[in-house]
Image (tube, rainbow, N blue to C red; front, top):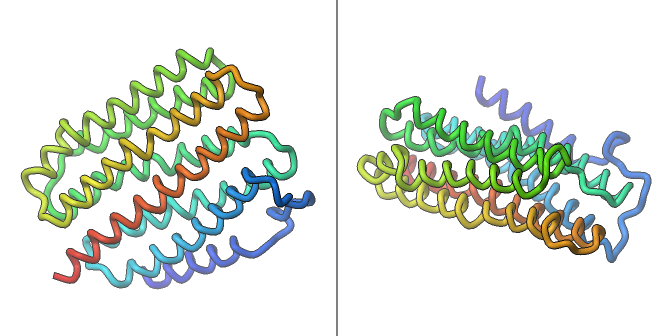
Amino acid sequence: MLKGLVRFALLAVGLLALPSESFASTAMLKADDYVGISFWLISMALVASTAFFFLETQRVAGKWKTSLTVSGLVTLVAAVHYFYMREVWVETGSTPTVYRYIDWLITVPLLMVEFYLILSAITKVPGGVFWRLMLGTLVMLVGGYLGEAGYVAVMPAFIVGMIGWAYILYEVFLGQAGKINASEAPASVQSAFKLMRLIVTIGWAVYPIGYFFGYLTGQDATNSEHALNVIYNFADVLNKIAFGVIIWTAAVAESDK
């Protein structure tokens, strides 16, 4: 059953990588369009990562398959949205805010689920850990979207998003999730957990930096959009692909014992 699902997922990834009428832009990508180039590079990297994570589910022990599958789902969902986002950018030169937040609304909660899953693979974890991580994620995303979409002033929305992020950091460093990792996890899982929360701390800091340069500097709107999208795009490499690689490393290390 699982092998069949993996084959189906890999077929879907392969189809995504092929040009199609839905994804093919009628506008040509220009050599000096660094934002457009970043969209193309990262969309292909996400497709490759998805194939890798799904294939590696066959290598790891059963208790790690869910974590690795979720990593593949994160990069798969992101890849689909990046195909659409790069088309919006190349065609119109405008920021694909709606597509980006739809992507984040799915992938960021899945990334938070990974903290819960890797701990659940080695010990019993209270459900409250899961729900607190989800709450912080939703506050962070809703605050950011309301500001970027123009529903509320950008500064109050920025503050709300930062509060959600701070709540997540508290849970993984000082809250129950952090305490379970410190007291019950083996060395390989502790190492992965620490690297994952380092990404949530440093890697996720790129998003408020992008938000700041995009909306709060008072720069020319065109320059701001360029900075915003390049920063967001390369942040996704760290926060989705690298995040999954860390989980894969822990899963392989524990499975090979």
